[in-house]
Length: 99
Image 1 (cartoon, rainbow, N blue to C red):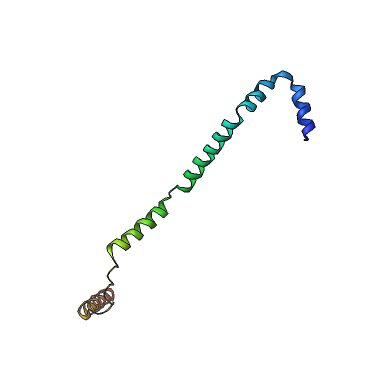
Image 2: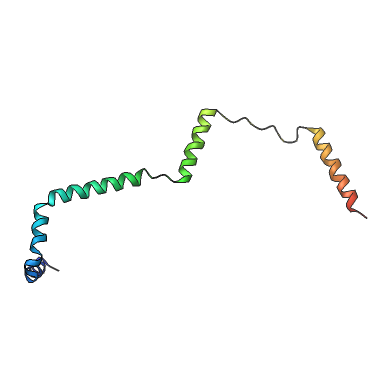
């Protein structure tokens, strides 16, 4: 559609579109400001959106920094008494299962 086609359509519509065109021509500045404001609000809302995962990541990072490093767990298998107790329980279970 060329400019001439648009102008022909405008002339064909007659006076029904003229009030709208006049209003748009008189208020184009305010409409531009409104469109820019709506775009800015949308951009800020999109930028500031918060999903659950990023919230949890930030909280975990904050807790790690504020609480200091986590203590390292004891090395596995250092308590020989518990290991022996586990072997005894395991051996007892095997003896009970045999007929």
